[in-house]
Amino acid sequence: MRRSEIRKQLRIRARNIIVQRDRRFFVNIEKKDLKRAIRRLMQMKNYTHLSTITALDVGSMIEVIYHVAFTDALVSVKVQTSKDEPIIPSIVDLIPGVALYEREIHDLFGVEFEGNPDLSPLLLPDGWPEGVYPLRKWWSVDRVLSKLGGKR
Amino acid sequence: MTFEIPFGPQHPALEEPINFMFEIEEERVVNVKPRLGYVHRGIEKIAENRNYQQLVYLSERICGICSFAHASCYSQVVEELLDLKIPERAKFIRTIVAEMERIQNHYLWLGLTAKEMGFETLFMYAWRDRETIIEMLDMISGKRVNYGMSTIGGVRRDITEPMIKRMEESLNHLEARAEYYTKVCTKDPSILKRTVGIGILRPREARALCAVGPTARASGIPRDVRADEPYAAYGEIPFKVVTYRGCDVASRMYVRIDEIKESIKIIRYALKNMPEGPIRVKAPMRVPEGEAISRVEAPRGENLHFLKSNGTDKPERWKIRAPTLANLLSLCRMLMGVNLADIPVVIAGIDPCIACAERIALIDAKTKRLKVWEGKDLWRYANEWYRKRYGL
Image (tube, rainbow over all chains, first blue to last red; front, side, top):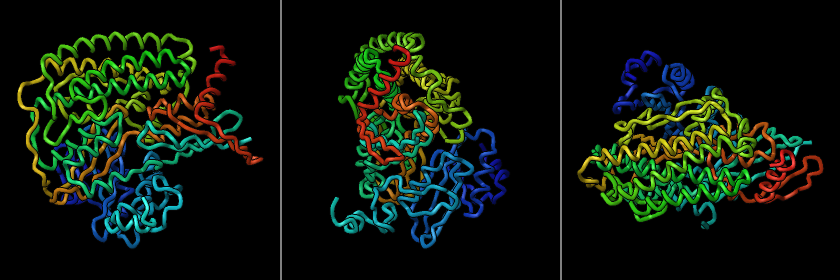
């Protein structure tokens, strides 16, 4: 796969596409364009599946990365959302297979996926305190422990 | 009448024990809900407080069965960030150990699935043969599980001439056994009755649900990271991606047995063409800032590690996606409409090792009466049901 192909398909500026190495592409897009971008990537030939969704804490924002797999490349689509209002459109209607990945990120980062019908806890236990998102940087291990009553 | 049956969650053979809530009508499953997290160990959080060398050990303990797949996937991602070129010989050794692990895993799976079917002789046979490959892994690495072979910059131990000789003998034995299992699994009427047409996953569904590994390949989708994105020495070794079109448990079984044969060929080729030279290069403690993704075909499917570094000796974020999570939704799809008696075999089909599933509670939806079953009871129920019905 080539950079120009992704650019043509997604109709975005070339500087938003980073070629990390052979077979690795990172694409920065706006939150509102996410669904359109994923749909357009799915239409490309050689598309196989969506590998997973990664979320990271980048200061005041949460970055969500969609790893879209092709037989000849891995395109990682990046979107950012603010921590105050972490809402991202769900793509579960496009790819039903992402349901669990979205639930996982909802658990660990507190990101709301608008349109996902089931965001019940997947990994965290029942009775987990509200507002504690263990993979956000502010929640250090000590803070989580003290919130849970100091017991492991 | 609809029954709700919680199944699990005690499930120690899998890295994430699962609880399934089944809704049963008559004896058909009409709805399934999975619930994870009973041993969520927070490895991704722990990783933020450990340095890169310590994480090699942690990565190996993500999963007991595909430990090498995780360790090599993690090593690859750090090597990419360090821009480290590992020696050719190390690449071949990684390929050999990865394929040995695949053989080990598939024999384990075959045994467990046979046990779920109540075919205990095959269970004993498969596990006896698994012992052969475990002894070889023990000979190379010094350990039977969690081999500690992969490290950042290469591998820890070399494969010597006498080892190759011993390995060739056991590979011949394993190949003959794999042929025998093909014969058993395609001819034996009780296996065919329990697996053919059970737990269907159509190719369209497998694509939509992002299935990976043998689960996808048994639905006719040639999805294999080794072929799509060759890592280690896979680019230099000819091999075939095994696919079957049956979409059922039988196909998942044939894919795995054929993969054992394919793995044996890969190991033979790699042993013969392994270049001489060093097996590792020194890696620095600090990793420059950056992001990298590495994918590996673990025995159960695609394994993905994402790593973001911040220039220190500890990672900023390490994301792991193990294949079972990717196959879970496909499993729920397979379970829809299956008979209560087929649940164990279908769950075993994606390879999450159900053998240790603990207890089952049957709730009568009308009276809310709770019947508690143990995993044993479901297993006994399933085998009795088939015995009565088909005399197996």
